[in-house]
Image (tube, rainbow, N blue to C red; front, side, top):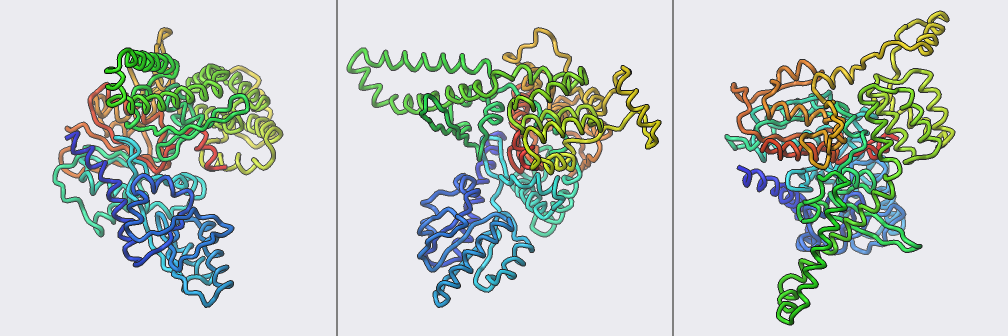
Length: 592
């Protein structure tokens, strides 16, 4: 079963490669390949340069809007479904047509992931429609790790949740349909959230028109499709594990982390390929950060000792060179990269990590609200962590306390705009639009002057603590464990260790309840809005403990780590998928 599941996941990249090759084969002869820079890393995941060359690709260029000196008469552009990029391609084609109208050039445009009507209309308006041939290409979800598959569609969150643009929703549904075709129809499918339920209808159309899987027995018992806005808290909280912090500080792209260490006017660039291919990463990725550096130090000592022993005799030296030198060299490079990553994290987080977690834990339980506001104001005044971190904290406070009062909004907005500039005025508006910020309803609601006076009295007088809807939901689903004073995240016993024992990601807790059979799915549906359950058979019991979780709008490394801990604790199998990887910084930045 496990072998079958993992082999099928490995097939995803082969499917993507085959689909792209089929398009290239429709364009006979030699051609130059011009690719949008944002598509290079995803492309490298499923096809290599040698494979492209074997299917007629001659030269490969990175698309640059000022223009590319291309001499080939046949060229293939590969761009995202983006109007701005499409306009740059149109400008380049028009420029060449004006300079050499007699020159015969065949222009082919591959649009990822979907040919939009707006883009085709743009090509027509720009006068290039008759000079191009367009193709639609959507790669299958990319395998970034053994049980991590991502669509690499980073614009989906902003498009859906901020702009209200559903044009790429069929692409998300197509990805999930691909997974259903690969694994089989799951016994239970849960759609949690507004967009997820729209996706359910599109998937139904695809199953009818494009086909259903031939597999009788599905590799997946439960498919859980969930909107990102169902649980913002898991993204906004500061995590404590190595991979989560590395993502927060350095960022990831297609499973690769690039960062620079500056020391005494010299810069050292590092690249970490964070997957099962890195033996050291496998050992440290889910460790609490304070436990990582001691492990790396002990590993470095073992390498030094093994090298020293190999130098004692000529025979040992020859054996070392012939059998172990290559592995040791690779290990040494990986070790140096992870040690540098630890230094980078400590340089960025060491001064503020404890204060962040202390104040975030207060927000989670609704304690010391005024101190939390004061802490956010201090972060703005001292530029602690940058403007993204300040907005992240403000969003967390808003979500955990059912919004901010008008006075709080006015004061914080004024301080933030003075500190970071009035160009962020629209940024704050956007945070309200997506629900990261909201206005708190007062105890007393009145538009009369008496109502305003009463509200001021309410703010001045200490009233019993109001229980927020976040707190009520967290208590029902047991998302806030009772933290013991001796809680040790270095020896985790549950999924909350990612946040130092303060919080369990909502979706992870739901799946945990299903795995342990603690709460029935129907009972969970009564506690949460916008949750739709679909069964493929009359049997409603999940027998085989294999789950596929798909996040519409992005999945965080904190959630991935929590699922991996759940696998370790229960023996179940969980495949995590989503439109992209996301953290607090990238979530906030995507809507600014």
